Image 1 (spheres, rainbow, N blue to C red):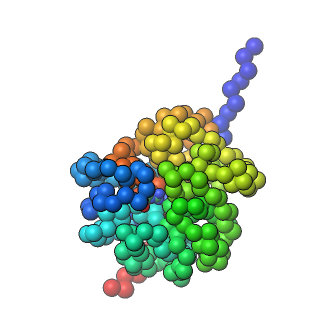
Image 2 (cartoon, protein in one colour):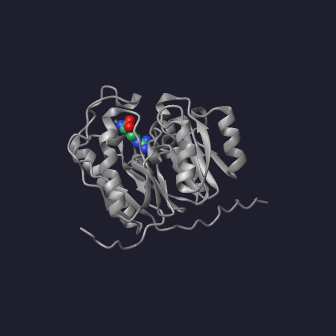
Image 3 (tube, rainbow, N blue to C red):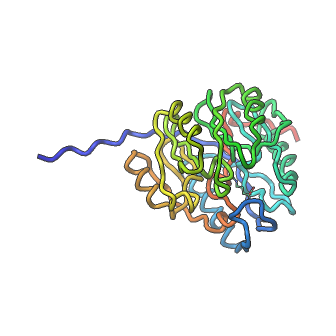
Length: 286
Ligand code: ARG
């Protein structure tokens, strides 16, 4: 007698509204994380790969808005770092490294134009959605240890009216939470467990019903730096083991190549700021 295979749950997609920045001025001009050391970018391939990420969102029916690229800001393509937006409210970024602080003002201006209310300019160092990951309208997961300061977690909780679960990061290759953890749905995350402390993992498991562990090989191609709409997961194409795990869980992997972006320590999610709770149309006041 054969045992029937366990059915994966039916997953439901939610439309996303995202903000991205074309990599017009993208290069590795300095090294502020281990992935950047000794790298040279192929700008044509980088643009092609970025367009692949954007086109994946458009094909899934998501809305994509664009930041205007500014010369001299080579990491601006990593739009996730510019803020966190939940329920139409925003908490702005304050970058750890002076090389990226020039990104703050253009980002804030763009969010205002898109209808973000009450953008809180932070006192404490934080790198937006690089270290703050959305679980639900009530809960964010937040990383600290390399970029975002722990004090910023409380500041974000207050600014956005949410609870924040703090998780310490311990491996410099996984310097932002969004390269060590991906939120898949409102009750599931995927993690590279060695990037966290035992305490962090215990706290995460106490709060999130499903914590899926991925292999080192998938984490090292930044497979966790993807974006889920609750059903489709756009992620680096080389994260094959993780894609098989996702399929078994009822998700639909949407693999894209991001090798040029990874040379700077980022992949799909880093290029994607998610805007939650904004008006569909904003009156143009210009
Ligand atoms: N080169 C950038 C930096 O080190 C990469 C940022 C990646 N962004 C992210 N959300 N993890 O700051």
